[in-house]
Image (tube, rainbow, N blue to C red):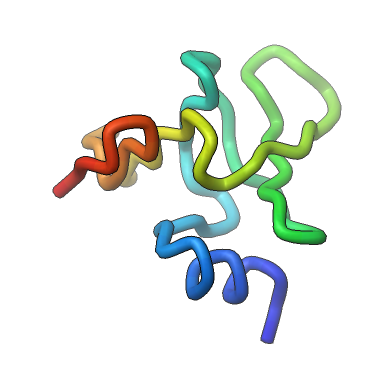
Length: 76
């Protein structure tokens, strides 16, 4: 099982490589996952930063609609 699959299963989040997210209000794209964290490339940055998959993360679908807001645990 890949790190991303494990995060999806254990944290019950829809995390996928290439998915748009906001973390603590900062927009970015999930590039990978490791050690229980999603690695996010924030808009305007060259490198990824690890983010806890349930800490203030809003997962967005390809059209920009909220799939899951972990701060409020709401979504479609």
